[in-house]
Image (cartoon, rainbow, N blue to C red):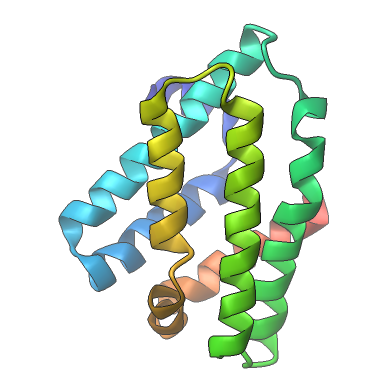
Length: 155
């Protein structure tokens, strides 16, 4: 799985994964952090396989592009203006929930219930308002913002 992932994933995304693992480890423990990283990798590998098998296409994910960009933008702007407070993070939580619904809708016909549960778990941990409120205080969060800004420019 990791070999396939590194073939398709850029350095920025690998940086994002590592920073998220560090932040989750500080907030929820090393075991949860390891689980979240493994779940993200399993989801990504599943999507890559579906893409290579032509069961999903880039246009399948067009509906998620706007939702994803809104998440990136909300976090980037909030970090830049130092307004990542509870109301803004509640909005980010709502955007992540919308993204979760969208990705599950796209993948539902092609994946197992376990994959859908992984998506729910990752989104519930990373989209938790209390988690986000404390995550912004770690130096690794600045790198997360950097990657989200990169995504906004690149995708």
